[in-house]
Length: 392
Image (tube, rainbow, N blue to C red):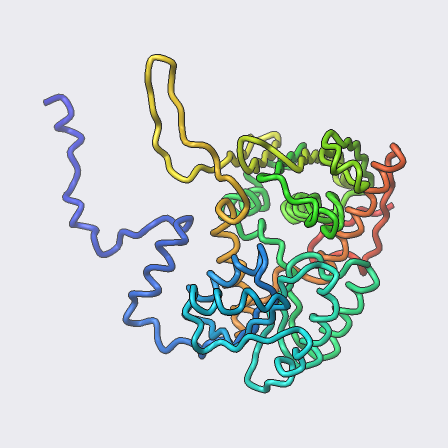
């Protein structure tokens, strides 16, 4: 046989040294679970979950799936959700609390942390109360509706010496994280262009949109955070154009489509393509281009089956919405927070990062309103460690 010369040794020869690629984080977790040499695990984090809405329900399933957490409390205003949740999740050892009685949660000396997943206008109060009670805090974005409120929350965290983690979950997506690692490793050289596409599915309800904070602070902040996190710098100029093709969204003074351009001090350009509704699924794409090549994250699908017939080939639709598309990211951000609480890791989303993203989103919104580019300037004390600031 012509290929006999290429015959290799038996795969059993290296069976004890062969291992998986580091990108397979699920297999890494599996090896931790079955390892007989992992040692005694750290005591579980006693946690209170605030809110059983869209985000809260995602966090609840991840909390209950983690052996690192003991869910002591659920703080939920709608008491009609209490009993169904107890039954569905078998929450025999979890105490349900109405927000009017939340002082009981803050005062519990055995409680280590609070996870805030309530409507935006309640965030600041719950965060301050939790921090004053000596608890670490995980909060869905934004920290507060106003920059002054965000500053108050972080000042409180500093004064009590407890972490305040803002959940930008796309940072913890395996594909987006890999792009960031490869960009920072120089695989593309100096980045010339970075693009994101974020089109929502399904169309959010008007009731939600009224309290969402608007498309720039509800949606664009994720893309702004991801782009600046990948690049390690903040823009000096932004320009936005927006329209409202859905009359119900126009009636509440918001937009349903946005295009953003950002210029960075290093010369890099960024574009963001946003929409409140894509009828074909949850469209999440990323592209980074440089002189040495391109990195591209495509849309993901629930399975990889391909059907072929006389008309061609087709796959199943992309993920329908964020709970399924970002399932890994939600679990990984919870693990990161637990690492921070247990002293195993430094917090990856800092106060400066959160404040900068809000500042950029404000500028983008101003640009959309005025139809003019908005200039941004940055002081050294606004920049996270390692972020670029070019001399004037």
